[in-house]
Amino acid sequence: MHVTSEEGEFSFVKLPPVRSTSKHGAHWMSPGELSPELGADGAANGSLDPDTEPDAATVCGVYFVADPDQTIEVTMKQVNVECRTGGLMAFVDGWELNGQYFPGERDHEKPLELRVQEFCAEQTGGPWPAKTGAAASNVWVFRSSQNAALVQYRIPERGSFVLSARFHHNPKPCNVMAEGLAPYYMLRNYGQRRNCTLTALFPAVVSVIALEVGEINESVRYLEIGGSVGLDPSYQLTRASTICGRSRGRMDLDQTILCGTTSVRLISSGRYNNQAMVTMRMADESDLRLATVICEM
Image 1 (cartoon, one colour):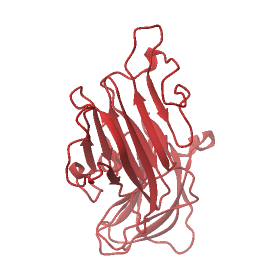
Image 2 (cartoon, one colour; image 1 turned 135 degrees about the vertical axis):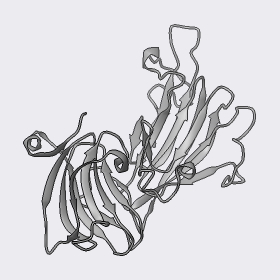
Image 3 (tube, helix red, strand yellow; image 1 turned 90 degrees about the vertical axis):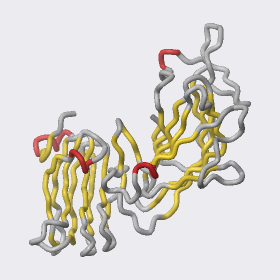
């Protein structure tokens, strides 16, 4: 699992074991640097403990997260991952962990079958099979709907790939993966019937700064705050609170969510232009005694 918030070119190569006391393993090259196990010519010249290498059936991933108001464009420049040996790659519009997705399947504008695009390529057969969206130059370009995207890969024996990542401005962000650095986050439905979620993969203290959601006496549009064990809060969110209405001034409603995943979910019918401003910071020891929700970790 490789998590990055950087743009640039990334490459990965896996070589099979050789008959010696040394093992060639899996190596990363990130923007502006070479993996320490790779020489300047790209040849492996170091050793890697075989116990640290992933199992042949292991699915690994490059997890991208950008600023809240950005989307991620991934260009697959080279793919040398053999289909016949069980190799496979996939682009995911969002993140996936343990079979759950962010944004949740119920909240994303696209069905899951359109969010996950799989591909592979034979060494001697040229690029992967052409499909809708494939460019004539054999370069594939994928783009996320929010500030989170994932490239998954399974390489049982040997293979390599090169990809580049670019971030673009998103004029109407809805679902946001919190990187923990923004001073505040805005959740807006822009008058549409859509659910928008702010999610952080850590226990957090959430503070609602301002709120403009539906009418006070209508519960079909609301802001729910809580935590969960998995990545998709729409299925198993343990709620700390459910609020609606309009704030008159700063609210500063603090809630401590001691769960593996913290989420703020704006649920909208489309009849109102809903919005909420919240802050989210990582919880520390001083927040433990004020926990609003505690999940099994």
